[in-house]
Image 1 (cartoon, one colour):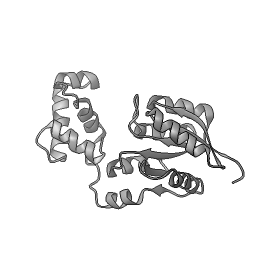
Image 2 (cartoon, rainbow, N blue to C red):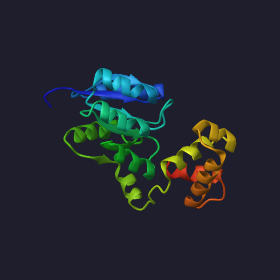
Image 3 (cartoon, one colour):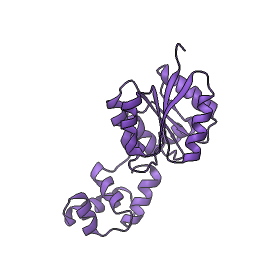
Image 4 (cartoon, rainbow, N blue to C red):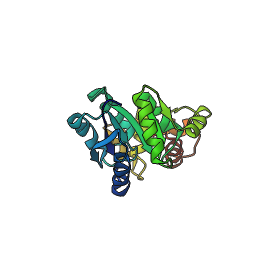
Length: 204
């Protein structure tokens, strides 16, 4: 390559973030120029350092990595988003690619594979963990609407209907309707089961 590829790492686990940065910096053509620990810090950091690649975890405090992808792509269109996560769920893969991610990899892979994937992405490829890609082909698409996902997530901590309604600025009857629809679409018996199934499928 003509120049060093600039990387930003968004990962909430300090030890993992540091190890990843150290190992990637050992590659002659890769340089880590920024690290963040929170999802709500990613876009500002990307705008500030303008990396070539943003390595993004999904489970981040402040804001989910999946929710950040679109904003990163809009803020710095030249920045390729690579998801690196423990949670290899078909629903997550679909959402990530739809939002504009260029790669979806799991943390079990060796760092050499990650470095190779970064180079492939910069060459214009879409890179997906092959086992996850195979599972995704046979998985059900996300049946939930955006509002149904919001209501399920808001009720995950055992909040009452009134609490959820207040959080989302909806009426209690509207919350009940969304929860009922979500329970039906997930083929479960109650909202707790609906949340668990939706989370396990990567629909939230």
